[in-house]
Length: 285
Ligand code: ARG
Image (cartoon, rainbow, N blue to C red; front, side, top):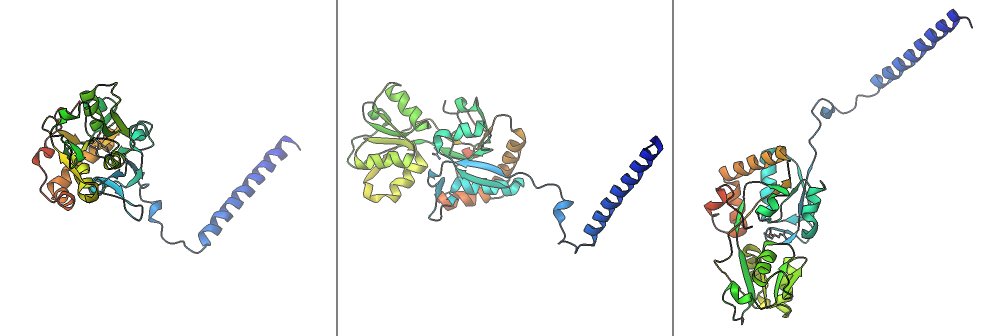
């Protein structure tokens, strides 16, 4: 082939390819019109926000008979999400790995009755507080315990790595062998029922719920004003301010329009304490 021939050949070849492409396109256009697809013009739907929760913590988060994750925290986050225009999906996540999962990006948020503490604030961000809590002691009905200090030398069950664990560790000392740590709070309470521990220290809401629902366990609760007030917040990965802002806006909106109060009343039967509206004060640690 001469130089000219080659060019001509390429031109023709090019035209042929273009023609084939046109034909292909034309064919596509002739095909029966597919159902209107608004997705094509609408912006891509936002990514689902994955929410980790240790669903063994009724009434805040637990699994119902169908295996669905339900509870106060869940409804609060669902309501926040509706206001903030985000889509959330709850994933049951063991407490012990829950903050790692957040740090690694396996979860976008954690709602798990998480107490806002200064120590946790170093490694994660928190929403504004959404619930006031305090530690509460569970003992058997016949127990002589009347205050937290009485637990100094007793066997005490806690859920590992919770604020209850922190409180008892502080009371008994880091090296105490009388602190029995459990993977979940219900497991600690079962141990109390069977006599393996003398007391359990855990969040008041969960202790009250458990005691009320297990009359056969013959428990009673002991409150102590020595326990520092705690507040729950939704935890996010440090620096995820975009999502944090949305969550805080959603939270403010559900508090303003009565949705929060409705959810609160459904689970706790009384108006929420107004302190939960205030910005986070110094946390327990
Ligand atoms: N409020 C306590 C804490 O932050 C206990 C939370 C445990 N939550 C749970 N879903 N197991 O340490």
